[in-house]
Length: 103
Image (tube, rainbow, N blue to C red):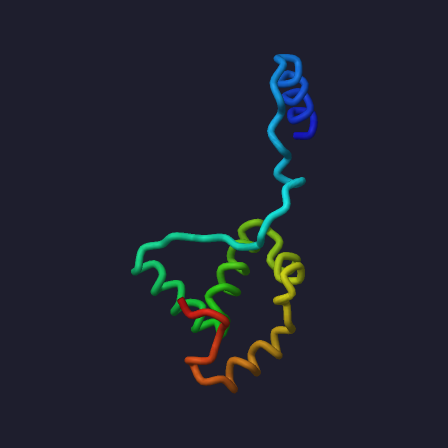
């Protein structure tokens, strides 16, 4: 893959064009806005609630799992905690207090 990228960059420069900024060199805010239908939004909130996590955490876990790196993603964002601690918090909080943002 690196060879393909290098060849493409050489071709762009040879054509007198400026290559695009590298995605890995950009600075990201950490905020992602996702639009969903009201029905999907509701199903995701229920799924997160059933797993004892906030919607934000659930989305991060699923996105990280899809990328094959959920644990690293959560550690980088400071949201990783031991499974037993998460379960204890789930059992001791009323439903309206669970999670950072319900919707």
